[in-house]
Length: 451
Image (cartoon, rainbow, N blue to C red):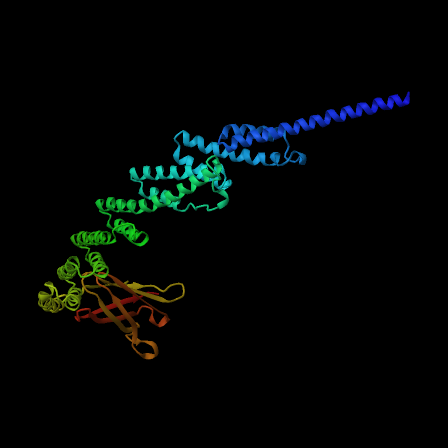
């Protein structure tokens, strides 16, 4: 009886083990089939189908169950990759090009660039960027367009023999090959297009009168893309822009600015007709500037301009008359100095009380109201008490220092002293000197000293 029960128990255990084993085997087999189907969909490029299958794997087959094999472990990564790829694809499909570019770039940052979907993403990204860059260019958004094309140049090639196609049915290898060709062609197109955009941008800026901006774009083309375009033609165009810019500045009487631009032409170009004319223009501008300064009675400044003509541009037509004009300016300067005087005005308090420190503080302000020339004065004098005695440091005259007043400006002098002896007396100072044309100036200052 006991033996029979034991046999039955053993039979039950064996049957249970068989059922469990068969269930596990079936579970594992189904997982293998799911993995095979999901990989097939993945490899064939059926991204949506592959995503559903891999999501099923992640839900039904825990990645930490070691006996299931690698398919359960890698399924979550495939789900993440496919989700990101499908998201970017849907943005592209809906016409959201800018957003799709960002999504594909994010995809390539997060996932492998050399596998099937990495290759598909790279090829698509190049195509989208070329289309988007052209669209920005057509809409006059030159800076943004250049930025897009430069981002294409920043995309690197992935040279790997292991990824080369094994045959006409190797979709992974073919996708890699097409992606590498797309990147290579994208580089070529971007390198050819960027200088074209810069030149178009320069042309637009020139029409707007933004010569500085236009010249800057030409400089970039000459520096960064010297072999793409006709360098000589580009340099000539930039010289013409400098010439036009200088002309506009000259018309606006910005002589300094115009001279700077013409000097650029002389420094960057050879002995061409435009350079010869630039030298003549420079001499003329200095002459015009000198005439303008003479009208403003700045004869010394005008003489300096004539000297520049005679020393640096003595082979120009303008130089022929410059020496005579300079001699006339010297005469005008002499006459101006003889007849033009500074107009000094001195301001001071007629009486002043002692401050909290028992000191008198004398503040004297000097102004020049003529607005043409300045002057320089020095002061000296005495403190006179009520009995007429004169006092100075150690019995000597008091020096108040030197003031220098520019044309139309002012200067201030301050003097402090103390002593009960001086109450009800006077501070008497004489200021003397000359203006910048040598005319003598004398001014008296007298201040009554209150307690």
